[in-house]
Image (cartoon, rainbow, N blue to C red; front, side):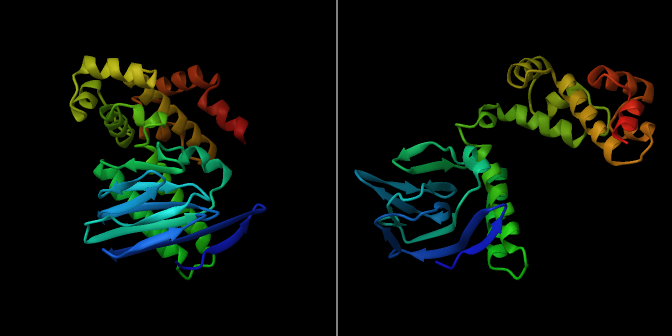
Length: 274
C-alpha cells in the first residue's frame, strides 16, 4: 500500500492512505497485529473475505467493512470467487468522527454495513474516489481535501447505519423532507408532499409527527425561517426579497412568523447583527 499523506492540524497528526484495487482469486493480506489506524474497505464487485478467530465474513457488492486499530488483518478474495474489486483507506479519525464509526460489530473489532440504497452507493463511491484522487494529487492541501471526502463518505454511510438515529427514519419521510427542501422557495402543499413520497396525506402527517416531532407544515416553516435568519445575517438583500425567495406569500406574514420564532422582527435581528 502507498505511503500515507501526513499533515499537522491543530496539534493533531492526521494520516490517510487510500486506493482502488482490482484483485484476482489469489489476493490475500495477513497482518498479525493489525495496524495502528482504522481500515475501511468498500466492496465494488466480486466477493471478499474477512477472517477472525472462529470464522470469516464474506462480503457482497456494496458491503462496507470497518476494522478497528490493532485488530488482526486476515482478508482477501473470498474462496471460490474469481475477483474482488475494492476501495480502501487507512486513516486516523479526528475525535469528532467517533460517532460516525459506531457500526454494528459482526466479529471482535470488525464492523459491517450493507448499502442497499442506490443513492447512498453512488455518493459513497464518489466520495471515496475523490478521496483517493486527492490523496495522490498535486494540491498543496491534498490531505485536507482527502479527509473532507472521507468524512462525506462516512456521513452518507451514517444514513444507513442502523445504530444511527437518522437510519431509523422511514425512507418515505426522508423523501418527503428532501422534496420540501428542494422546493423551499415556492408554495408547497401537504398533498404535493404526500404524492412525492407515495403516502396519503393522513399517513404522511402521522409518520412525520411521530418521527420528526413536527407536522410537515411546521418543519417547512422552521427550515424557511432558519434560512431567512442566515440570509439576514450574511446578505444585504431586502427583507421582502428574502421572504419571497423562501416561499412566503407576503413580507408582513413573514415578519410576524419570524418574530414569533426568534422574539424579534427581521429588521431588529439584522440591526442586532450589525
